[in-house]
Length: 334
Image (cartoon, rainbow, N blue to C red):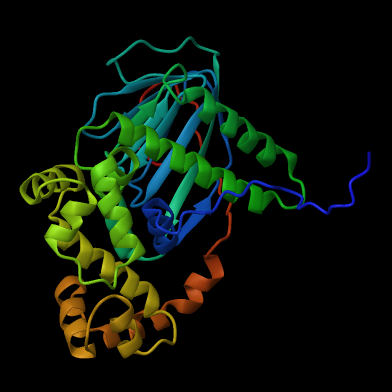
């Protein structure tokens, strides 16, 4: 029997969460996604890397290697293992760690891929201050299989060199970053900043409320009620998970929004009202206290760098790694 009714193509809708702190933070950070040329090496080998003031994500696609980050114990990585480096100091990838662990068999092949996330706004790194210098998700960890499936697509896309590759690489890289951050949030007991919204129902509810209505004149009592906690319990729990008092977080988030708005042509009065200040002077005072300069000074400074930022923003770049094959540990950079 044929129906004369016309139905929508889909009867199910999934609305994007406008109050998602994850999405907000990444959008304001304005990451530039850089996909370096994959690293292939035959043991013995070592590749030295300089400090990287952003976030780097990598995966061992084939073989094994050691990851040595200055100040940390060396980490042994196998096929399917992922690593995330937050603002790392100098580090080394290689087939050995100079006597601190077993060497990988001579002639063994290692193939790694990595993604760099560079932030155009130097202040955006504050959003990732809770990340450790290095974290690892092993292939057999919870979530490891999902990460591997995404990475397989990333490697395939990189090697395929088809039309639209840059767009696909950029989105896959950001998906990998979100899943790695989720993994860190689920396993860490340290202050997590806005990552706390991922794993804590009470603190997460308060963070989502702040992100949804940054202009609202929030009080500690209102935020505590949103989190369904007493005022004292909320204050203590928020500080332990986020690393700062609730109202301090609110002010810092407002200033992040203000930085983004000051790159537009919106008036200072409009920006002040949008983030909860009743006057331009009150906004300017708070902005100077947090940022170290007035909103007008920040706007001029941002405009001076706009051309350079516009050239790189949203572009997937490809850069080569120079890898030395050398049986002996050595200094130098790659």
